[in-house]
Image (cartoon, rainbow, N blue to C red; front, side):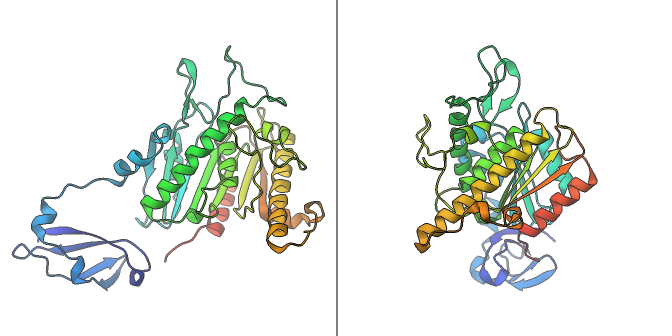
Length: 345
């Protein structure tokens, strides 16, 4: 029999899940009022059934095409990996490292095979001169040597803030398009992409709540963010006019990994950056508690180590400056994601 796609239905009595409504054609009409979602047969309202002739004459628009038109143009070069179960309960956004592109990270997303999760691999927004790939923030001097971080030099930080704004808009678009709250959107970044991921996790879109989680591999914090940070001056501004620190609680879980044999970002530097990130998260949360309760909070320096561990999990593996390499690292990542993600079984 001829089977016709009627449309997509989302309702509370379907557990807020989208379901494909299909029915056999009979005299140009669709009489069937049943639908199936992963083995469960549910009754579909007659109002959701349409005339077959209208369905046949319609033009299907892919979600990828619709989404890329709404994304910030520099981030529109992205690749999509569908959920293995064709259910979108979570979104995972992958951010490549310096000089990389979305292709390899789309393959990584398929290999991860995360349940009920649509993956979107983004290309970094800034093109590197001499056709050397892409970057998340300005990284090179005029002579193509890497910019060395120093106090008073805001170039990389200003560039990162521009990228932050684009990622904030992208999160809004993804949330609206897939009808998934920002709290179910996760970021996974490598190296420079990890820095952009952590920064976006610290600055979620206003009015949309916290991000579901951030996975940062082989980096976490831009050195200038530490150099320009001041516990006494909370309103220090960069050229972009953005505060280097917003007094706002961040309950987003952070998961940072690093290689003990990393020759680009020494493991000692990685540990120092994670320590700073944990202090920053604790300080923001404590200052927000003071603002809302009117009571002076306990110093974050006096908090137990396990409390800071909950704010930011840190793991080390025997590897160099590279992406997920061992089964152990992959297994630990899956455990973090399973703990933070939400599923509709």
